[in-house]
Image (cartoon, rainbow, N blue to C red; front, side, top):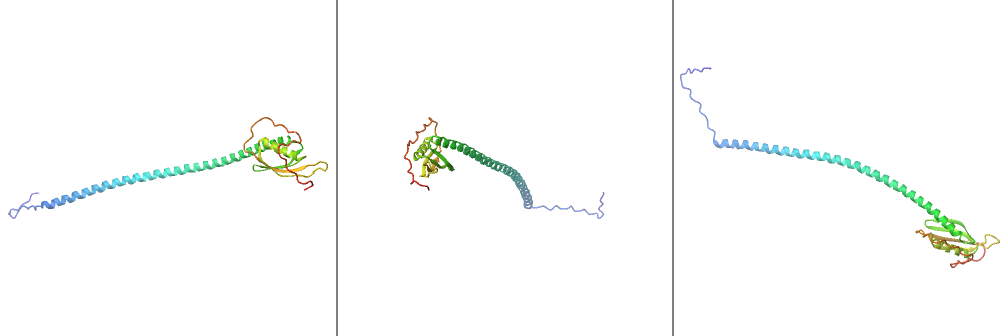
Length: 217
C-alpha cells in the first residue's frame, strides 16, 4: 500500500519513551522471583508426593504383612490347641496304662505276700491314692505280724500301720483274729533280689499287735 501525504507537511517521527533502568530491574527481579518460587514449589510438591506415595506403598505392604501374620498366628493357635488336646489324651492314656500295670503288679505282690503267711486271708482291699486299706482274718496274732514283715520285705510297701486287731471268732470251733491295717505304696520299685524265704508257722519277726479282749465286737 502506498501512502500519499496530501498536506505537504513532513510527518513528525514518533518519539520513543525511554523506560527507567530501575523499573526494568525491578520487573526482571520480580519475574525471576516468581520463577524461582514456582520452581521451589514444584520441587517441594513432587518430593512430598513421592514421599507420600512411598508411605502409602509401605502402609499397604505392612497391612498385607499384618494380615499374613494374623493368619499365621491363627494357625499356630490352632496347632497349639490341637497339641494340648493330644497331650491331654496321651497323658490320660499313659495314666490309665500306668494305673492298670501298677494295679496288676500291686495285686500280684499282695497275693505273693499273703501266700507266704500261714493262717491268714484277706477279706477286702481298697486303694485310695497311694494308700492301701486292708481288712483280713488270721489264725493268730503272729500271722498278722508275719504278714507285716513280708510286706516290708517286699519293698512295695512302707508306713504299714495296724488300725485294729482283735479276736472275733468268725468260726465257732476256731479262734480267729480280725485285723484292719493300712500301708503306703512305695514310690520306687523294689530291686530284684533273692526269693524270700517263707517263715515258719508261728514265728514272728516283729512285735505282734495286742488283741482286744475275747468276745465278739
